[in-house]
Image (cartoon, rainbow, N blue to C red):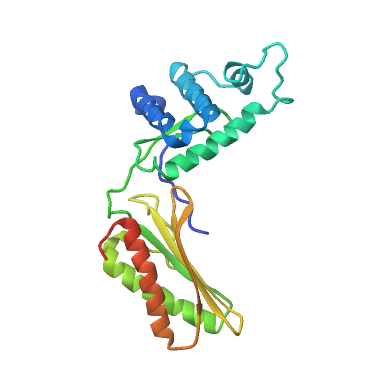
Length: 252
């Protein structure tokens, strides 16, 4: 999925989020089912966050993590030979991504462990109220010219009409050349599609992506057969619009 680079959480200075709020968020994560069955990830996250809160001005080095968390012998431990910290940090990052993509998507504070380093990054999440999330509609991409291009243009127009009818100003029209402004409320979802034709079959694909998590939340693929093009475009647009409204919790 290719959509504009968007920013939804702004890194905050340590005193912008109260330590109590961070500890509460840590408790939410550690008490979740995802981390309840991942003791090593839970221990590492608890250590990194707690140490950062207790000593915010001190760096967190791989060597100290190996000694403090994984009980490596300080006299013989060599991180370049024993990669346990890097391995467990990678697993922790993936579990945090999974947590915030699911159970933690509405939590007030997001905790990240950067790809290079171990000092946690703390950001505030601004959850959209149900039914008020914005949707960015990208152009339907045609694989080639001719029939595919004509059908893609008609499908894009049908999608724009139906989504605007139901979402109003919550729909952002990402027409060619569109640049997302760096102010205002960013979209929570992106809708995009493609049309390909090989002379025998014309294949259409539509998908909806949750931007913050980067995961596809709905996708539909259909091979378009013979028949009136407008009727087929209407059918596909209606299917997509229903999926979008269901995801946003908006009555259809």
